[in-house]
Image (tube, rainbow, N blue to C red; front, top):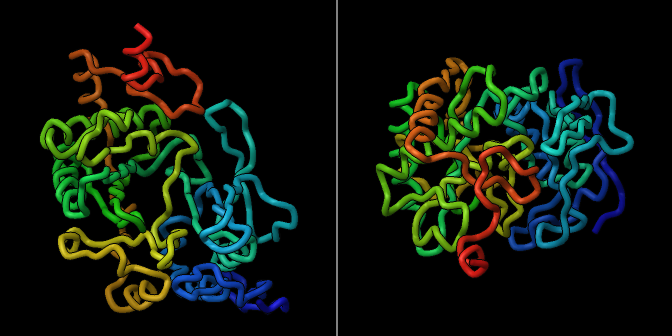
Length: 340
């Protein structure tokens, strides 16, 4: 592995910006034979689409000490030595603590993150100027054992219909693994808890329409061979890999936006850091206009109110969250039964 560093000239609003890249030949994806330099060049190639999706947002960096098969950690606070073109914004976490979190505004900032051994980028659903108010309603369709990608695609199409009935446009991307992420642009006027409840309302409606194929069950023992609608990804400080972010999997996949028309024929494994730049050049960015017409979650909020009136209230929160009002016990059902 080379020990010498190199300088990459990266576009910025002020002209080319030199960004240092140490150990450029360090292999990050051994199976694919892709290096740190390959990753930096990928981010430079896809920078306009990557920043449209992930820029101007608090972002967590998933950083690796070696290759993608090794140890990693999530970096939220700005590390020492942050260059002056990488800014941060104060955000409040579920614990009530407030700390600055990194924000990416230009290609050089993304390449600097690669220099800091970042592989996966996890942007918040809110903008840096209003970090408490999400402008994206995000739904993670998570396949369970016994389900296929075709099952996820079927659920995504029906979810699109559900969101359309609620007056929301929707956009879809591969997760970079086996699932799909569905986003709807929304007006940034509600706090995370309200948006989470809107997601739950949509998830429950999807579950009603596809009861044998979709579930909102938080506990794995209750999900069966159904697609799990992970509503908890809508919580504050809960993120998923951003659009055009690489994933730490052996073949160097990318979480890639696709059109609804092409979804049925999609092979998620085909979208990698080696193939996505050419796709953007030839096909374009299906998410380029995602935020042109943000919608309202008022219909989903009314569905939530209806469900609460019918006895369907809160669902479990992640285990590291404080106990929330109206939340059921955070004990998997089989253990709860054994206690009685």
